Image 1 (cartoon, rainbow, N blue to C red):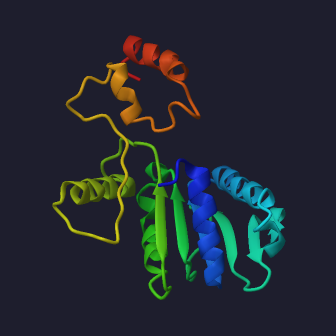
Image 2: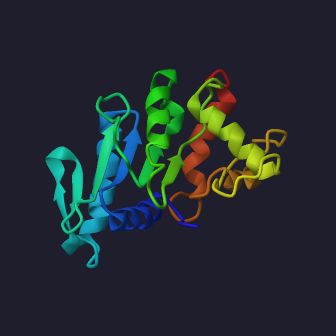
Length: 204
């Protein structure tokens, strides 16, 4: 499994570009977040001796085009318009917990718009949310059913990092279960202040 978002982006986008036509759509809640995602992808391509000669990056349009096939990587925000009609090989939904019921139609359109592709792939990357009526929570519940074996779905790979609901969340030895980047992107000390705030102000 990839260790972080960067590895996911690099591997998945390389696959999508190779398949031709519209390769990848990356969807976030806001235009600002979409730009961050695009910049990460563009940076990885620029630093790759294999990929950089193969594509043209258009910063102003947040667009990366494969020179030979015309396949594209495009970053979009869920609050924009005009996402219907795409036939992507890969859709990456970033921070799905921020998506509300208003984005349900868009989510459905994009997750069904890839049916004619040979190897469609949908990737959801998100932190936890609190809205149990959201798209994210429904995906979370389905993922848990697959992990428990209640549902057999060989096309669905759920990977959830969380502390068990009945565990003592103040036990710092359990934190790595919910924080997979500990040890190489972050240290335990990075979360000490948030921990103290949570203890002092539980209403937050």
